[in-house]
Length: 242
Image (cartoon, rainbow, N blue to C red; front, side):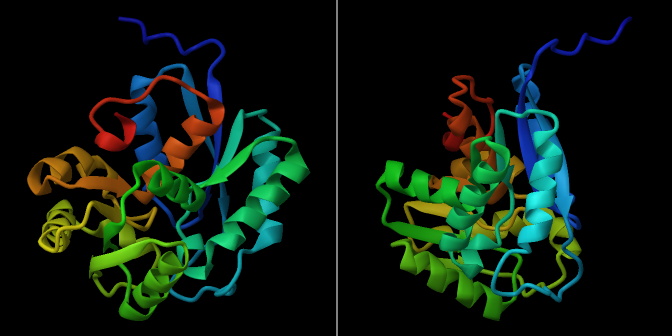
């Protein structure tokens, strides 16, 4: 039986992801499988181990080079599907988007800016936060979210520091984290790390906790579809795409 033909003229989402990330590509391909007319393409920037050589900023030369490579394929949007902006401050995401758009002429977005838009649309005020991070990084993230008016009323972190290891968190641990923070009654639970495999659990978490659930990687894709004004939405990935 012949393979199904590829879409002749797909709408492309250019995606920048950290080099040690093994979740963004898998999530993007799975989530967009129901949208055959939308295809993700990828470029990477160096992120290795637990030591970040740019702890308080982005590696802008690497980011812009990755964006330039994606721009060669003429995507409709370029998205930084990474979660670092949550810890260093979302003004860095705003600056990154401006620089990418100036350099490529292509609309840009980030997971972080998509989160802020979704918060505004939802009107939610009380949030739960689950991550794989160590406490110092978690504390920094919570402080930056507070600066954007996002109040974290319950949180769970796993104490991990190596970027590659985040992708190894088993599903049952993520489900347990979500159940734990749901006990405090947040309106939304946020999973914030794009190398943390929480997106496939979106529907299960919402069913188990009766709480809206947003995942950082899924937010990056939601943001890209939003910027593209793509009306189709994937099924089975929770209320974010309803």
